[in-house]
Image (tube, rainbow, N blue to C red):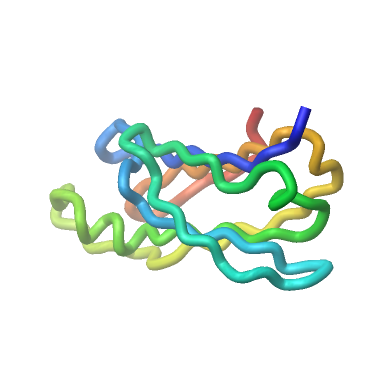
Length: 115
């Protein structure tokens, strides 16, 4: 089975996946690759990399949460606090699936290695 990198972003203010949120993904090491821009689907999910494009190394996903917040109806009169959320991680076995979700609220976020 070929490995892959996926994500899912949950907007806890609205209680839905963050459809349309833009992200970038790139490998940082052993050599840097160009950033790939992706907009999340309506359910807040996306396949980021797979097959030959997904190799061992260090990666960075940047979630453009400030842009997303400005594009959604205001909640409790809050302005975006976070602009971008960078998440850096290592892929040791590119033959397996890596899922990097983000749970976001106006003033905090959580991320982890999911399944």
